[in-house]
Amino acid sequence: MLGKLTSFLSSSTPLPSSHQASARAKTYVDLAKELDKVNVPVSETDCISCSNPCDETSTTTTGAGAGARGVGTVVEIYEGKSYQDYINDKYGDLGELPKGFDVDWETDLKGSSKGGQGRIVVISTGKSDWERDHTDEKGSLANHLNKVITSSSIPESDSKSKSTTTSTNTNTSTAETKSKSELPSYITSSVFPKPSNPLTNTISIPPSLYSSSLISQSDDPSDQSTIIFPDWKVIHEIDNSYKGAKSLYDNALSGELGRSGKSIDTNDENENENENENGEFDRRRSWVLPYRAVILLCSHKKRDKRCHIAAPLLRSALHTVLSQHDISIDEDGSSLSHLDGPPIEEMRGTNLEKEIEIGKRIEDIEGVKGGQGGQVGIFNINHLGGHRYAGVMLILFPSGAYVSYGRVTPQEIPRVVEDTILQGTIVPGLLRNAVGVEREASENKSGKGFLSW
Image (cartoon, rainbow, N blue to C red; front, side, top):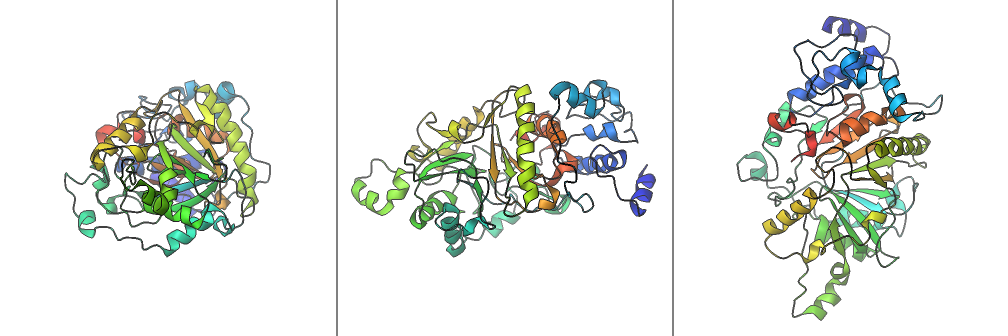
């Protein structure tokens, strides 16, 4: 079997430009095996298109064929139908990318992206297209934040903490302390702690900024809102100025801060003095996001029209498929207005106590551990890199998992939803890179994939 593949790859014939083509599906199956070896939850549904069935003694634990043996045959996957018949019967016509749509099917997709290792800041603009470099838009929060980050002294991580694995280091799980040499280059362990745990090591990687179609839900219409990952929170009432950006960075994005950021002392005797010095910080408030996942679609026309064409087609397919699983969609941020409970900044207690409370709020999100129901936020964002692989998307999860996909077509959206959103598994043929997705072997077989923590 391996000899057949080697012979095929060494020939002058390129792999077919289709995810369901048998020769290409075989490479996806091999990638799935590679990921499974390092305890990355992965879908095995590519076996349906592979011409070489898996060993009859093998058992897949995830995806549409969960629990099946010898999953190279059609009968165990997709209700005994071909993938195309399955999606047509279940979801109807999901559409397709235009004829002649130029996608790079020749170069290696995996490893074509390196993002997701630092914090991600999704900024409200209410738009789906921006200047070629979105941080060049003068007067925008992205412009101000970029200046702040560029001029800030990013603290170095504690090298001793990073190189020494102990039971008290809560920034990484046991699976994530696996030697980095064992992980493929396109899979990275998260440097952030899982929910409910405090930050123990300084984060030296600067935040990544994305302008988005998110509409600000701040009370003051001139202020902006931002979504912060992996903190899984939204921050409102951000003054759209350099001062507002500096306050946001110092009190929520700096590498020494955990999910809770800096607290506000509402009982401070010097309240008036603090209001003068830290007015932007004092009026800003944040809450845990209500979403079970966030999908970010590149729609940046001024950078490359392919992403601008693909984004609405993928969004339409997402609407169709998610609705079949009783998952609602927030496309403008309206679900982030007037969230329940006191804001994070007003929490009292130690850092650990505050992180535990945030972890509880995250645990209470509907659908956070998989299955039907809940809500997904879907927003357009600026250039992700790799537009030749359009459609491209990022999928973020409360667990801290970050997944970057490329070559996504409307026909692949059922796999994005069923395998990745519902079950927390990687679709191998779409993978560009991922962060924080590896799990203990026992967790990997739990059926919750990287949705768990």
